[in-house]
Length: 333
Image (cartoon, rainbow, N blue to C red):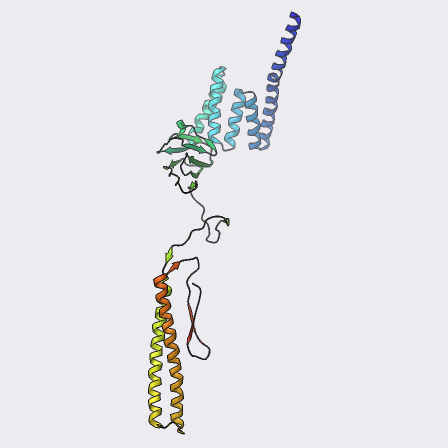
């Protein structure tokens, strides 16, 4: 019974130790593949293989090679951090040569690093600040942190507050992003994300984003159609003046006609012509008076009553009637 128990314990130890022993072999295979890709010029692929090897079996040599690969790939902050880690590993195993190389490479990278500072001047309960989707610990707020050159999205949110976000491009110069005080969410409105963007792209006027038909649209405030009322008033006054002018001419022609031929039956061609022109001018005067009165009445009605505006522009067109008597007003309001 005791022998059986010993065999079971031995088998259990072997079962546990087998994956552990397999890890260095897998890590070595990944390390060799990373070195091959690096020699072939595939820097990104090489860094992935070396990173996987280092996670499986952390070793000073792997860390030095990974840091060198990251530096070649432009990930300067990650490379600097890995050189620092390699120096600490070398110190722990008393490898002075590798430790000195890691320290030298880290010191050479330090002046080339770029930093991102996220200033939080208005901390509130429940405030969460994220960088590229990962929440930042509060101890990292207001700190100058070295980062790889890249695009970073900063999002700040809190319960009952409007979410704020911005995107910053970190390239060759250090940047600072200030998180503003988050506005309270109005009680009668849904939560709306407030966005800010560093160096926003310019959008052409005709490149407006698509909108849902269900989205609420802004309603223009009521207005009194001041321009339209003024136009109608001017047209009305002009029509009345025209009617007065034609009326005066008609009266003068009729007077001259009566002087030439006072009787009802008249054979004088000049008197007959003046009488006909007098009647025609009288008709024009009547039409002008009617049109002017309608235009003035409409102008007064629009000005007094008004109505809610819409998105269309107020336009008015005036044209003479066929035959030359009267005018037509048209347009959309």
